[in-house]
Image 1 (cartoon, helix red, strand yellow):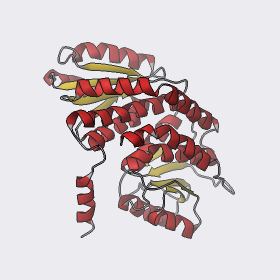
Image 2: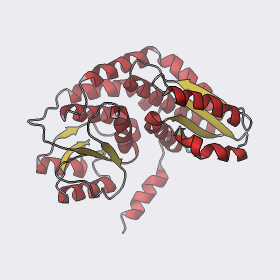
Image 3: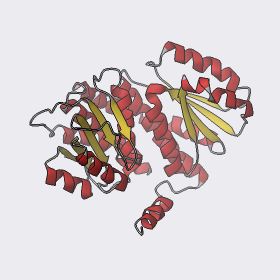
Length: 326
């Protein structure tokens, strides 16, 4: 996993080269978007929807289930993202999307999803296979941006912003790794809680996913201002066993920043283990990619401190094998 995380910027650059070859013959009319995917393949849809929310003129929803909403019809663009192409929930969701008459586009490295796309002449972007899905995030998130651009949901500016993120991450890799190592060392015996603003919730979810899969640990996250309306009260039972990680950004609403500042005074009465990481970059895309890469490194180091195998996911393989019997 260390080598795979180190390849993140190479994946982003390669993904752009792949995306540059994708073109649509025509752009169909659509009123809404549903992105289907789970796990490492699905988190990109959540993050994309939040990064486009401030300028995309159609609603984008992310689905992580066997079923799709009733609103899906012939005016819905359904984007299926399954790195393996064989994610059973995504495949079933796409069969429902066909029945409901949706417009469909796909991202995959192969498998049944690619076969369906080719057979039905759906737009398809194929990425290199052979990686754990969570380690292919750099390959798939770029294709989501490309499809969003091709269908008119965003401008081509995303491309330059990703390349700027690549340049920054490469230039500051040593510093990022040092920061991630220090955080992993400090939280190795704690239960991490990731707090951030609403537009970065997908990034916080990515941190949770990587803590689970890479370092074999549990964590949770919440967002501001929502946590001020419920979870804040729960801090009455806070303990020193909890470690809070704040992911902040220059794009955070000023009132959110003030809420974080005030809330921290409450949390600090229960635990001194509070860490702050401010996103780097000029755009939301750059800042999100910075925080994602920082979190990925942190979980690799956390696995080392805990003596865990950051690649191994035997329990997920067991579950898939067990489900295949039914």
